[in-house]
Amino acid sequence: MLSPLVATFRSPDLRKKIFYALGILVLYRIGATLPSPGVDFREINRCVDAASQGDSGQIYSLINMFSGGALLQLSVFAIGIMPYITASIIVQLLTVVIPRFEQLRKEGQSGQTKMTQYTRYLTVALALLQSTGIVALAATGNLLPASGEDCNPDQILQDTSILGLSIIVLVMTAGACLVMWFGELITERGVGNGMSLLIFVGIVARLPAEGRTILQQRGGLTFGLICVAIVLILVAVVFVEQGMRRIPVQYAKRMVGRKMYGGSSTYMPIKVNTAGVIPVIFASSLLYIPQLILQLTGGQNTDGETAGWKLWLEANLINPSSWFHITFYFLLIIFFTYFYVAVTFNPEERADDMKRYGGFIPGIRPGKPTADYLSYVLSRITLPGSLYLGIISILPNLFMDLSGGTGQNIPFGGTALLIIVVVGLDTIKQVNSQLMQRKYEGFLK
Image (cartoon, rainbow, N blue to C red; front, top):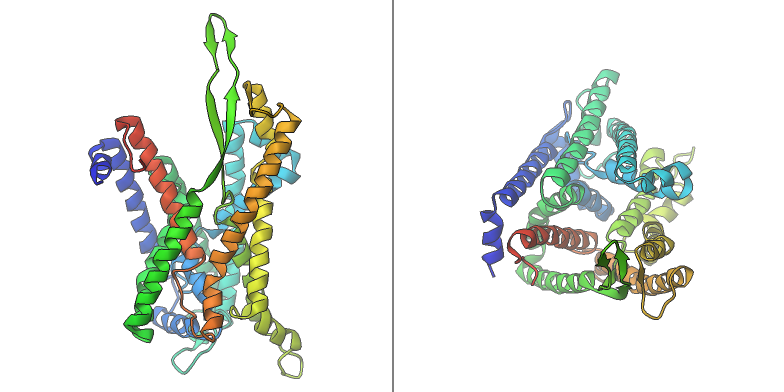
């Protein structure tokens, strides 16, 4: 069982890639814990701890999960990788709307290089915008709620002058650009997808602290039951993530000069969860908007009383244990799953590629009938994939509702488990493919 692991580190090239990726990840975690200039690190840590235990603790736990605890602490890498992911998604979606982007995507490597350049420019703009908003919230004391006497949100920033705030914004923007460069370096010279590994490390870095909190607050029995539930959810997630529909594809024989090509049989794999964790990230980000609106506006009328719309938002959209929030979150995940699959998987292009190289599905005519068949299969297999994503994601919210709102820190459920499993499986498959090139033996038998 350990022979593939030994073979991995015996290969000089593969060992160099693994240690290179690990070194970049260590640098990323150092930057995530390094506070920005002018930030009172002790005060902001007290406010983060108080906010995570409050009524909106699930929202702040979600923010901490994606940033590895860096965002709410206003560290150098506070913005993290999210601007790059957002920019990548926007550029990818614009390929459907803008013909120029569609043409670049079909130009091959040169077009992909140009789109990557556009993604980087958009990442810098989004990082500057996001860091400005976060620093503005911190300067006005609205980044974190005032909870108890130990937390004073107005004292988070030591220097609230224009120069002091500008320095923090520039440091965070530069940190986001550096994180983007880290992710690209891991993808090019390391092992695995760099952007996914950065999110993976940020989530894993939070698990020991969250687990210790559960053990201290609820005791060993509850902690053990949660661990058993984690194992069961992990088994289910791995089982579904490995599931796929294999569509048989036959390639006809053809003569090129004196040589015969084709005549082989293969299959086109369509995963049950084709969209990955992108729909969950989309839905989570969209549900964070009401909380951000309340922080920016305060939600009070001119007479100082709490506005009615604020009460409705807090009771329905912001409260993660409400049934309205759970249902809306579930429906958003289903919608974004179908939307993302429709954007990334084009049956017409797949059918044209198969026809160009002499491939066909047995019993299906090439061309439009093949595209219609692929659309039919994709629409049917996306439904269980979207339901699976929705159920896994709302499990922590259901636990909160069943426990009367006391289960606010459930860090191992939902999005965290999905990202950990998906990124882990993808990295293992990439290592396995490189082992197969050298030893014809890998991790996956």
